[in-house]
Length: 573
Image (tube, rainbow, N blue to C red):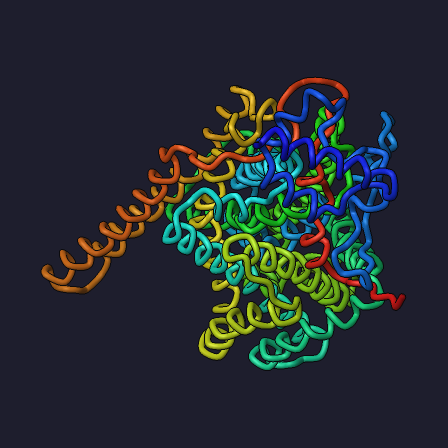
């Protein structure tokens, strides 16, 4: 019966081929799932599987399901050339915006003002870790055709999946808090608007940004990148005036040291500001927008060029962060500094940092720094919008309009920012940025561990799984980050109990409660680390054959991913 059914399918497909180029993607996917056995039995009589799409057929393989929408697609040429790297440039630089956002500037300023060059090694470690981890996120999307959030939904049960989604959403809100406060600081420097009013205005800045994107997201991103690059150049030039001791800078880069609880707190915030959990979800999804050659060599080339592109983007972010810390450390520890500047360095935040650029910009330092800070915060809003869309779609299979999604995230970030700015002023708002960065560091294992496990799995990645050396290096990096977090939490708990004025019974109760929370945190990490992967993946390349092509079931670019990106260009047929 099955053999007769397969023969009938073959005859109908051969007739179909005479009148059209290829089956529509939805039909081929449905037939492939229903008649798997018939396909296997008919394979011997057909030179090519009937449910595979020919590589030459480019007319229907990427046709959107909605005919009146055209999406900006970047097609990678199916030939070997170093020029192909220009087709891959984009996702890594978009992700790197998060490495030079207001949260990074705030932590860099405080690290340089309080510990001079002593925490530069954290920037070096975090940049190296970010390069490795972001490349793994890109590889996961390229090889499997699914991003990290989708893998989590397929792999974990409903309750762990829901918890991971909540943690990812908290991370996105925590990332948006520095953008809110940074924008409020910028408005205060430009127009003398009170900080709490600036926080409220940031709710409308999201709508303005999305309105401007209708004129082209690439143009807007280039303009924002130009402004941020202007600040980078200013800090680079300021290095010549500040003249930091090169031997001290190198010592700070390559000799790890943590002097006191305050240094540990700043180290955690630097890690959280550099290696953000939502960036892992973002990068693994952004690579799905490229139409790469669906062959073993094409996949390897995509992974290699994405690594190079991420390296270039993160190298620029690394130099900017090092220059900010070096300039701050040199200026705030200079013996010839004025009393007013000394007072600013004792409690340095984004609202007072423009004096660092006076040698380069003079009286314009405050205005230009404010414009660049505003651009930095708003450019990070783009990455937050993308990440929020992909996280919600991947974990819950739920989609919202981009402006609704971004407005909800911004409202959640405005509430704590408004309360702190009203009570604590600019100093309290600056401390809130540090706390938000620490939250990102604490939440990093819940995105990092699934990524490491998925990319090391032969079942999911096939021949593209992480080599032993890469797996060992990434697990060492992850263990170090988690170890610093747990050490700080334990130390903070013990110190707080010692310095508190509570009674003995209250101290014991708080100690039990804190230890229980720490145990739950550690147990959750161990569960993710030692749980075996159960869900397999339809691999895009299972063997090392040179000309192997993959089925249309996983053909890229992903139309649903393209549909969520901004902006959409609508045309009328």
